[in-house]
Image (cartoon, rainbow, N blue to C red; front, side):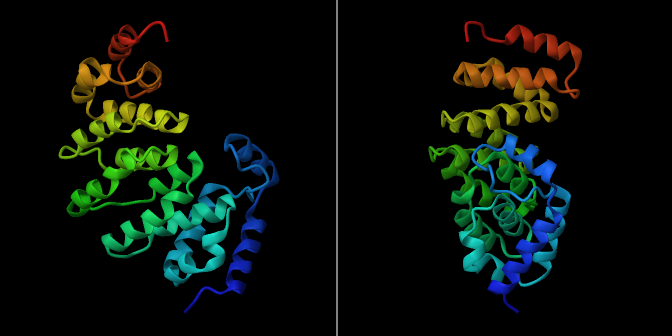
Length: 242
């Protein structure tokens, strides 16, 4: 099998047929830099297409010139969904992930793709080593990708400390990196309350910039999974003068 230029044209037509104009306008209003670069396809339909591609000659799709060159939001996201979800050895997935990360230029692609991965316990150490350089790469979405993938796949007893440590390492001043750290800390607190609360209260939390620290506090207080008592405690921990 292969993925030809004709196959790519068919994929574009299918995306166009699945698109919804009102949703396209709404979605583009939420994704900076993607104006007039989306079809307006809702995520469930996009994931269904991704599964279909994974069931076929997915390597041919990933290696096709048209798929690699496209800057369309849905196609780039589909590309990442296939990288994350196709059946392949961990080393191949990591190599294809490394090639994909530079294409990530918005939070929606980033977070959709990260949520598609399913990393086995036996592979966690290799993935932690793989993600480590991205945490300090200095690019907004390189760091966000690493933080969100860790949040999605590594909130476990043996790797919670790695997630918290990642929140200290990712220091890109970009908005989407800082929001990723705040979100990861909120999610970590919901699952590992004592460890994460201690993190926020000690020197590690103190080393976070005020905006990120306060945003993490805010997101925790907005979560229905955080108790009223803890929300009051967190409010008292908020920094002033930001």
